[in-house]
Each structure stands twice: as structure tokens, then as C-alpha cells.
Amino acid sequence: MQMAAYQTKQFKKWNKKNKIPNDKLLNAIKSIDGGSGIVDLSDGLYKVRIEKNKGKSSGYRTIIIHKKDFRSLLVHGYEKNEKANISVVELREAKQFAIDFFNFSDDYVKQLLESNFIFPLEEQ
Image 1 (cartoon, helix red, strand yellow):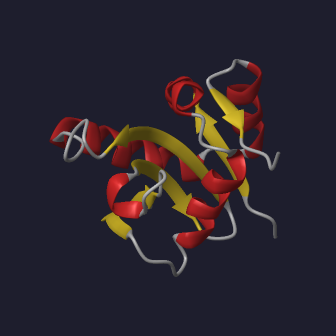
Image 2 (image 1 turned 45 degrees about the horizontal axis):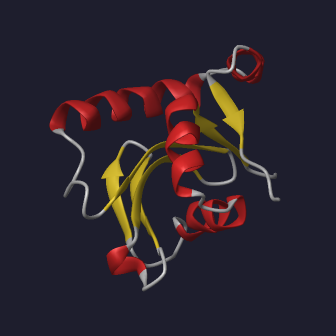
Image 3 (image 1 turned 180 degrees about the horizontal axis):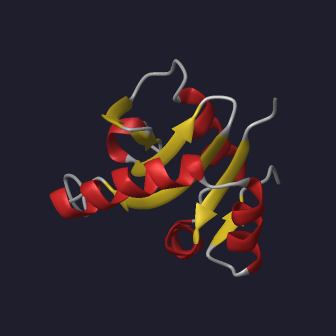
């Protein structure tokens, strides 16, 4: 089964400014299932480092909802020097959305795509 990868409108807007190539984002998602630089925040929510230019320690942090061989959603991105971590409220909301996201039917995901709430993340 091929995993479906998406990004929220907020993430897409953030990435438009930062210009992280889709293949790098897809590699970050793939790295969740065995890579380094991954923090499991529970409930299918992960913090994943993406290198900028000088290595992962000076790069970006992304919050990704992910279930292996199912679907993934990039929900939040920030630079390490912008903030140390997401807030407790952001974390709680993201965890609840992760639980909901995995329970959404394929038809509902299609509706989210059609309403531009989420966008596909495809190789460039």
C-alpha cells in the first residue's frame, strides 16, 4: 500500500517562504519509520528535523501526523532559532487532529482536498 502524503494550508504557506523541496519533505516523512532526529510525540504525531544547509541541528523542525503505510500530514514547520518547541496547546490540538485524521474516510480526505484545507505532497 502506498502512503498518501499531504500538507495543511498553514504548512504550505510556511514552506512557500522557506522553499523546502517536496522530495526533502517526503524523505522526512519516510525517515519517521526508522530514521534519526525523530521525536515521537505520541498519538501518531512526530517532530522531525530537516537539514537546512549546515546539517539537521541548524535546520527546520516539522510536526508531522503519520501512520506507516497509510497517510501523513505535514501540519507545522519552524526554524530552530524561531522557537524551541510548539506550545502545549498546539501539541494538544495537533494530537487530537492526528487521531481524527486517521479516522477520516477517504471520501472526507477528498473533500478536504477539494476545499483547499489540505494539499497533496507529491514528488517534484
